[in-house]
Image 1: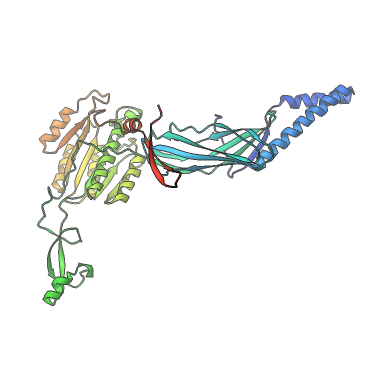
Image 2: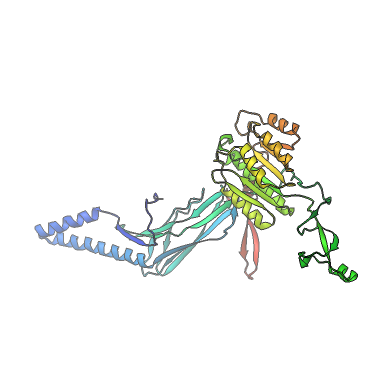
Length: 435
């Protein structure tokens, strides 16, 4: 595949250029020879070469007018381990065939290569699909791209640029089995709390007299009708509080490279814990202080999970904010009764005093340490884990490879595809992963 040009046309356009210069030099030599030394041989060669140029140019000109391409992404929401699939179409409305058409793609998705060469007969079209397994989270772009063709003699070359791009975010994977429990927050278990909530929750505790300003949807109509007076429901606070997931994104404490980096393990844990919280109808938020901070305030529901996954896809461990500063900043936006899960590869305990201050504000804290030694570091994280537990905080040490790799599991299990049967019914078919 050719290197990307330094400048791409601002609008989709076609460029025709001379591909071979030697025939031009030969044509000029024959022209001079025919003028200086008139001879039937020179004239015959000159007419033959000129006709070759004319045929080649008309051929390419027809392709420039009538050869078009398109591409369409099949699934717009993908995660690491999923299969990315695109449909490509080439249309040749000309009366001459496109003997070869090269697809030039400037897509920057790791491991996705769509550079192919196809052939399209006259008044015909060609369709095919390109697939790849998503290997890396992040924001990428599909396109720009181009199609390139030539005449049979290779004299002229036609390139049609398609400058439109489509943004695609590859989300982090979600691991279904994690040895990390979710903190409870306000209280433990399903026990009710004694305080009454000023907002409607799923738990209605009792009723009271209606007061001016109470929402009408809180009125308990059966009791109001029985007592001939308006009564409204009182709500308990939720038995479990909000959860914040804090990822340590300081560049100085990270270990590993590529997919084996500590930040990739932290993102996997954060995405999996957030998904579990959403499944349990918990309100969950995310904080990561990289160079581009990703802060997602607490919320619940499937939409909140998508927001967190998007933030995790864009998060990188390139920040200068240490964990102590991150805890201080998070303490200003968390409220009493919430819980914080801290995921860090840090090997020092300089942030422990700030962790203790969070508890004084009524914020429950759980710590997940990424074992530095297993990720290639020299320090052993067990000593720091012991110090955290002595302060009364739950702490777990996660070693490299202990959680597993969803990408490898997905490739081993294969992929599900939707196909239309002969009766028109859509069925799911499992296809093995490519080896």
